[in-house]
Length: 353
Ligand SMILES: Cc1cc2nc3c(=O)[nH]c(=O)nc-3n(C[C@H](O)[C@H](O)[C@H](O)COP(=O)(O)O)c2cc1C
Image (tube, rainbow, N blue to C red; front, side, top):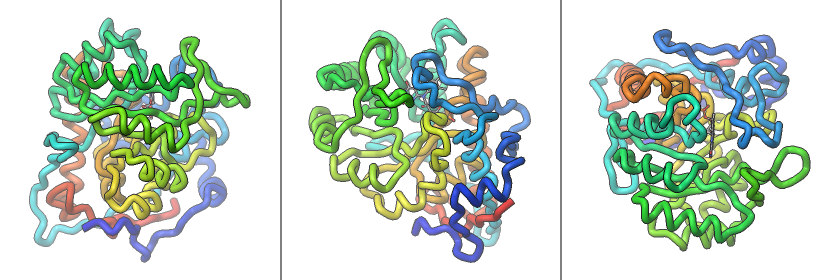
């Protein structure tokens, strides 16, 4: 049973100031302990122009890079081993009435057609082949239809359009296309220069709790909010009746964002299982996934780590997702966790490196 508390023996709640003071060289070097040497970690990639208009998207080498802080936070967490009474685990995920083979999901990407003629479809097909949840970000209606046609159980993430009619239209389209769930990335309303963002000519706007309630009511699909990093937003999502939240800084749209994994424990304490908790940003190994699941996440998403493989085809993406699932199972077996319902946060120890 998860109690969502890090082991008090070694856990120290680090402020961003202490992170910076204690290990600035490591943070700035973009240190990465990915055990999967076979696939080079891609490192944080700049988001496409449409995502990048705000110029608030960070790069790993910039001061205040949220990606670097996120990597550093992952690497401060150690796991103790528990072999007595351990066995091989199941990585099956039960979610919204469907059983998946893995809690490792794709992330809500977009604009992958420059890597491969149908990059977004390749990405979806890989998720379908792994029986994993698939996420899609912005994109044309027809692209979503092609993605869903792969058989991938797809969560469509809609932008926070100022015009709610466009949001409702996209919700209806996601439903009629056969999406698994639908949601909104609430962290894309501003351009980082004191104005609202404009994406492909359409203005974005932050959403109120009342507006969110109306989106939830408008669909029979589970509605998910992506871009939550605070108890403040998590509570409002619960009030609005959303089915799940994605803890995410969207690859660093705002500098000095709290690493999603760092926010997880506090948010999980408030959510208490009433909404599903997903997490993304910087997950590059089964070990990273393990740490998220141990601290209260239901499943994790992987974006930029898989992105370079999209141009190599479905099997390359699927193989990496399967390898990450195998890495996760390896850590689960060595820590006495036999199923996704049995994670114990006291396995995790916080160490200041
Ligand atoms: C090329 C690219 C396009 C993206 N497009 C979207 C999008 O349309 N909607 C969205 O919610 N997130 C979008 N994201 C953000 C990802 O869903 C994810 O939050 C972010 O990449 C962090 O996860 P990662 O470190 O595993 O890549 C995009 C990211 C990238 C790299």
